[in-house]
Length: 166
Image (cartoon, helix red, strand yellow):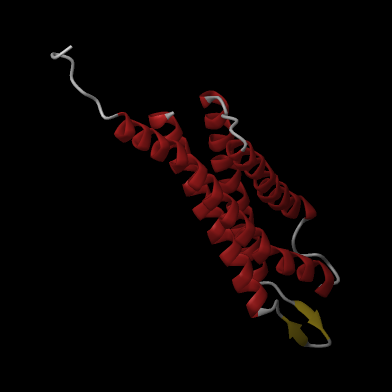
């Protein structure tokens, strides 16, 4: 028919493919940021428990951070592998995972910053010598908190992209 507009199916499929790839790339960024965050907090948390006679960070705080970050590394890796195998997640489930991830990463980042502030001013008195936490470990700890907050922001972007384009 002469009146039917000719559509470029190649152009439509390219646009659809790029819209489908963006959530995958966001998930990869979330995993990379989570790996940086957990890599930065492991040594400080371990050393603060060993150096001082009285632990300065509560195990509850450490558990919240580890469970959140490691849990979302696992969840996002399963989602990435499922995407590569051709499986697609329902929109509501994707929104739920991403929004809960944003909230949990804000909580984890807040706990890290709280522990950093608590440890920054503390010291242990041993024979009139003050033993302060390592400056390197303190910087690693706050950097891990920053990565957790950046990852929370990426989760918020993921919620927005999923809501708009899925």
